[in-house]
Length: 309
Image 1 (tube, rainbow, N blue to C red):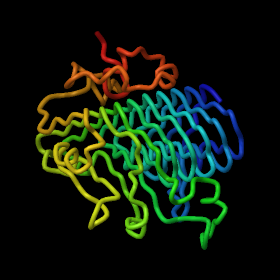
Image 2 (image 1 turned 30 degrees about the vertical axis):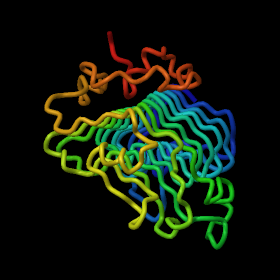
Image 3 (image 1 turned 90 degrees about the horizontal axis):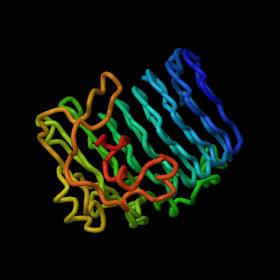
Image 4 (image 1 turned 30 degrees about the horizontal axis):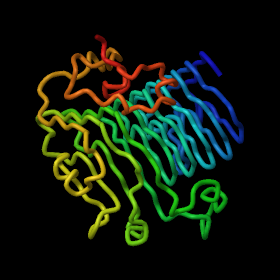
């Protein structure tokens, strides 16, 4: 499906069901769930039930205050989500009860959660730009046992296999009005004594920027953690001390005074100038470089756009 406008729909704009090797490219999705239905979870695009290798590339999803953006829901395998612009959604890219995805080169603006990974495994989140949009990776105790839709969780990884994620090379920006953590790892309280391994196998080379007014807010929430299950950190230094295997080369710029991007209002989210130290040339795997059409030098810039030189 290419070059289509899907807008002002009652529920989903597009529904992909039990299909494989599908491509959604250069489409615009806007104002879905215009009836504001509750008790039901709509999205601009729903990719549902035993669906493999669905690629979403170069799409625009916007104006979704009562709807998710693109939702890979239940039993998806090896999704590819690249170069999309997602703005004003509940959950922008939502990957639930599924196995394996690449999420790279996307821009998430003013979403409740730009990326939400729930009860899934092996999702690789590389070089995205988050603007007032949380990146959330979470797992719960939901399983096929005693579940109202028991077949749903049975299509994804078991409770103790919801891990293996990668979060690397991303640019996360929060302005003065944004008071949430930029990156959150969440886990149900009931699991905290049972699942003690991190949900991510790699989390590094990310760049965080907060305005001066918001610099006292939580930067990163981590779970599982000792005692209270979730630990909040206002800066990277304390986090690196608590979790020395992660965010070793990441950078944090609190109290940033000027503009970081050319113009969010004009939909131009390229960096105005270099920010911090360049990322390592190894920050982006070759497979993802090929998908984005980037060079190793391009991958040294955090976020969704290589720096113009």
